[in-house]
Image 1 (cartoon, helix red, strand yellow):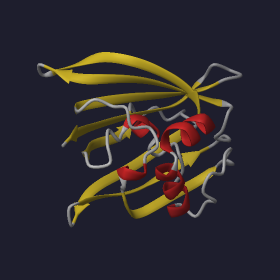
Image 2 (cartoon, rainbow, N blue to C red; image 1 turned 60 degrees about the horizontal axis):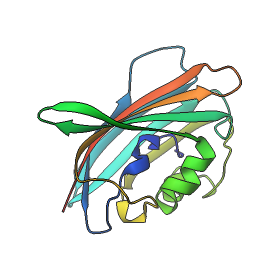
Image 3 (spheres, rainbow, N blue to C red; image 1 turned 135 degrees about the horizontal axis):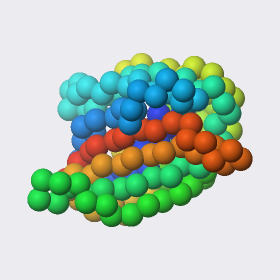
Image 4 (tube, one colour; image 1 turned 60 degrees about the vertical axis):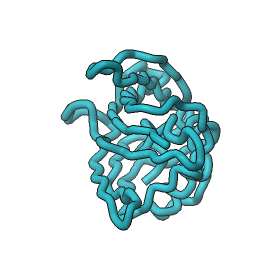
Length: 170
């Protein structure tokens, strides 16, 4: 898999000792015309979350794709908008995910740090999620939801959409 599979995790590590629990990772909707499609499953094994899944990309994944990410925080039972971040796919990989993203690439049989990635099917099986390797760490504790809209920069077309819900606690 590559940086897109957990693109929504762009904010997922508050501190090395924080416990990050992914509750949900899925496509926002079942649009059959998306050029980037994701199926993923997460389970716990021995106290560690493990991810598996497939990413199908009909287009190159790199600086041609803007990752338009809305971040929400759970407040009084409802998700409240916190902020919006826009980054190209390569910038998100290198500036936010770091070694976490590179490990995901390696698990998918890709060269760690490679960006852009060619169109193709990328799969990961039983890969442990080690959030201590996440580069970006300035995230509040609590339950958060991230909605990541992938926009092809030249055409402004929405080519994929993923939602991630997770919690961060001590």
